Amino acid sequence: MNMWKVLLLLSSLMMCTSIKVQAATNATPVIQSARNYNCRQVSSAKYQLWSQPPDTNENNEAKPLTKTKKLKHKLVQLDKVAVVNGTKYFEISRRGHNYGWLNK
Image 1 (cartoon, rainbow, N blue to C red):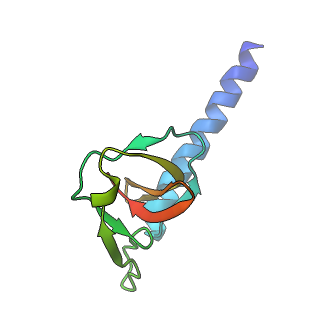
Image 2 (image 1 turned 120 degrees about the vertical axis):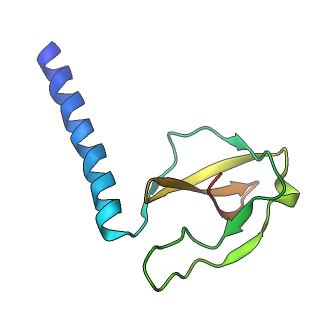
Image 3 (image 1 turned 30 degrees about the horizontal axis):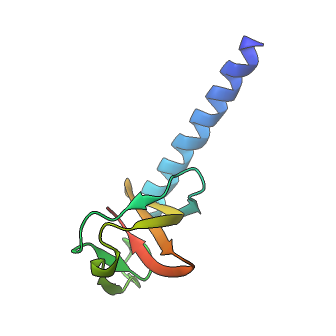
């Protein structure tokens, strides 16, 4: 029984490290579901929302949308998470409206 737990732990660690290596070598965002994260409260009105997570390649298509002024001190749902060079970006929504990507 303990051997299966060890194997399961090792396989999950290998999956996590392969995702980080892939993100570092391709320099493109690795986008996954954010179902394992809880909702968050936006703490500042000065955060920038983006149309997509930034890409470190030359053809960066991420465009700034707006600041989080209307979302300050409100709970938002985390829909997706993207990892770009070790930085996490969250796609946020509230009451069915998608607002964009945030990295705070």
